[in-house]
Amino acid sequence: MSMTIDNLRVDHRITVLRDFTDANGITMRGGEGGILRDLGWDQIRMEIRIVIERDSGKVDLIFPLRATTGPRNGHMREYFEIGEDVTPPRVIPTFHDHSQRKMIVPPPEKGPAPLPEKKLGPMKTSEWKTAAQSTDGPDRLEAVEEEMRRAIDHIGVAASIAEMYAHRMRAFQRAGNEARAIASFKLAVDWMGTYAGSATSGGEGAALSLERDEFRAALAREFGYDPTEEK
Image 1 (tube, rainbow, N blue to C red):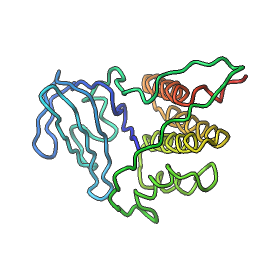
Image 2 (image 1 turned 135 degrees about the vertical axis):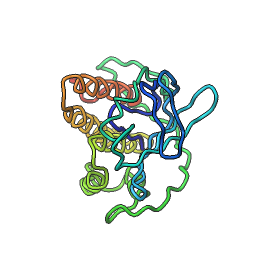
Image 3 (image 1 turned 30 degrees about the vertical axis):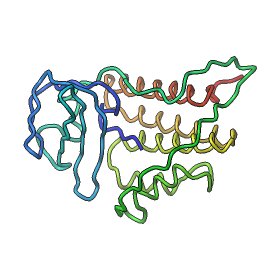
Image 4 (image 1 turned 120 degrees about the horizontal axis):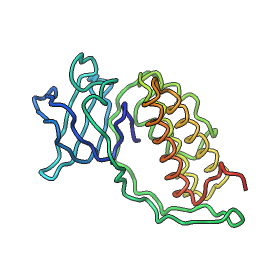
């Protein structure tokens, strides 16, 4: 599932603001840029991983979680500027008036590659993915939320939980269960609201609120309509 660290978000254009060298000795210069294609958190090695796609190829950057200088959790804005969203559309946007709301049923999802079994407290990362794709259990997965919050100690965890519920929404869409897909939609939007509400300054609040609104709009296009809007 997608992760957010500071202002970084996958499938957005990114520009380096200041020179830096990562843990593997790769140097990036101010003004260089590309598209952020992957953003990861290795809880075993305690590292942040960023993959940037450039015209000359992809560059894989590693930053220790305990770093005190350079790009690191809480300081990514000092080194990276995020630009436009270049996320490939999952579905062709369909517009409906409120009197003819209809949920989009996406095609069956191809089986995902198995995830490595990393132990994170009582649960493994693959169990989080399974929970997101499963149509079993209650609408709100409180135990999964709590494990993710314990394992990922930064405000981006709220956005990651929102993405988990977005995956779960799609699973219910494919199953044709509109009521439960709506419940997952609302939980995803609520968690993105929590993410935006975690801002510690006015500027950050404006940026996170924009991410929240873009997330909700994109999710509504996938769903076919926005179930949080009154009829």
